[in-house]
Length: 456
Image (cartoon, rainbow, N blue to C red; front, side):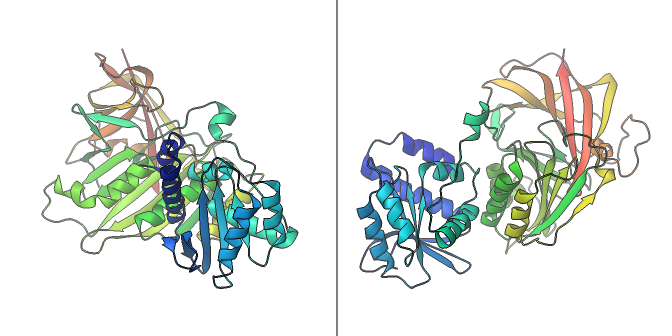
């Protein structure tokens, strides 16, 4: 269950005591996903009880998590400060309150700075859980405001769904052979591709895009989830992500960061279904999403499989149509990932290429994709690839495809993930489907393809 789902359940919980303990667990989950080591009911302020204690990279703080009817008053704050007096001098406190604070409580926190107390309100908590606010960035800003200006600062945030009226994107529903699946598997050639869920829009004139390439220290699935959340916050991802995993002559494909991480963690189960006697010591992982205002983001890394499984060689590429007017969020991303020397580069060969099929090419579905925001409507298909041959590469009927053209890789996979131009009820399959066009570009050294189909 995701943190957002847990928070939604808490919104419906009427039992105050049960909600309080579950809220502590939710806050612990938020901090753990940010890479903190979290201890519940810590004894750091003995003999007084503390909800949580969090530590990471020399940063240590106690946490009070409160979800009650009344706002937090000055007496609650004084009690927390009293606990701080029992802790080492480098420990501060964070208060997470879903019921707000009285003016006297806020004033007390701003004036009594010998024992640093940082206050988080409901909007900030919901923004962090929704991956729209960065806990690390807010924490730094709150500390700066207390120390520089003796002021308690709160972020001004409203959910994107309130601002735009649009339903959030999420993992798609995949149905293969009458069964719901989290990802699908097929034979491939030596290379891998990612199948985009939407048109490859770089924003503006994408003839000569600019690229920002970064490296990240990712060793575990927790590290990877944390990185993807940082990217969503700082880069502004749309949540239309798709992923690919490649090992030998087989690839696995799906959508959603949680499904991606689950597939990585369940490599033994994936391999067991193939009855392999042996396999390469590492598999290739790739992840792609669109940016809210045009552009693409790709992440590639590898997983060492076997007795000691771990992630390594993580690289990120952000592809834009031109230099951004305001690069402050990208600068924050570079700081958080240890890439302060990163620079933009022009990448003319990473333009978006398009090929339209005249006449259209018939395809045969083996599965359907259901969009999570539109109910029981088929928004895509998994089909047999009419250009794929197991022993050799067949040719795509397109003019002068150079070795660097990403459209060449349409022939790479036994199956294709196609997006339907016209959606239809998921329970009723149409008589005939055919390919309309394919778009392709490079991101993080992986060809990304948007394959469009339609029905008659």
